[in-house]
Length: 332
Ligand SMILES: NC(=O)c1ccc[n+]([C@@H]2O[C@H](COP(=O)([O-])OP(=O)(O)OC[C@H]3O[C@@H](n4cnc5c(N)ncnc54)[C@H](O)[C@@H]3O)[C@@H](O)[C@H]2O)c1
Image 1 (cartoon, rainbow, N blue to C red):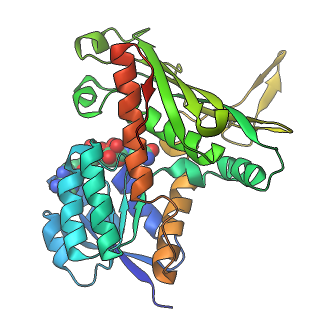
Image 2 (cartoon, rainbow, N blue to C red):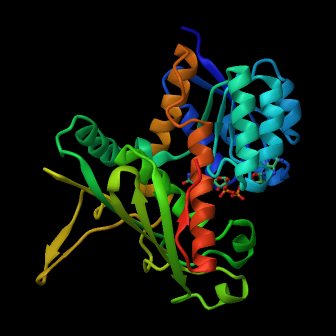
């Protein structure tokens, strides 16, 4: 079968990694990259040996580009997605799909009408540990899942300039945990209650954000959950997901990064990942492989526009709950 020719829009932290990963996928070719920032574009052209476009609209007009990865800042997603949808090319888009529920609804309607493939970059669904846990639950080996505990801790506080465009802690970080929660429990969240505080990075107070948060969850059918998010993991990136079933429990984490440790002086030392790109390096390749395989074979998206919509709806509900100090019911 012919390979899928892919173009990547946005060559920042995530986009560069996605461009690199396209060539690790079976059945895919990276053929073009786009970024308006000359140094990023130059680096992409040189490192990957592909065509470069300062204007992504010109890349979309390139007939060789058959499918597109969108990894621009979130506030540009809606406009970029409108153009990609108009061009009729299958889409892999980073999370959050957009910052508003209304924009997600428009995108969902448009891709449904055009029968266009769209996959959202919730990469934890492709992490081998999370996949193993989900498989156990779906096969009924844990019994009914009744309780979720999930935490995500960033190594350090964000750069101050990033905060105003991040959407805040509950959108920027917890959107991943909220997606994992509804996916791994296999049912929707009905209510959220969130609290938060600045525990370390005082500059966040002026920016109206927090560095630590907790979200209580109520699920359809009676399940409960707790999500913890933090920017204060002291130089490591630490993600854990625990699901308690009526018969068995599953625990996903990755304390140790490299399979190597030093023992001596009554101590054991080993490394941990210090950033999301390291901890989920396999998940980022696996999600793109799913994109390539599904587009080539005509399969439905495993993380579709509705999942993107639910991610931002839940993250905004958590933000509102924190601001107003009350439980928020999720409207369906
Ligand atoms: N899945 C994850 O784990 C994860 C982690 C971090 C960021 N993200 C998401 O990835 C997206 C990008 O984040 P980032 O951290 O890579 O940002 P970044 O700022 O590092 O990179 C964005 C890049 O997009 C380029 N860009 C801006 N406007 C553009 C346009 N119109 N056309 C083409 N390129 C354009 C910028 O020049 C920059 O190089 C965001 O939506 C973010 O939420 C996801």
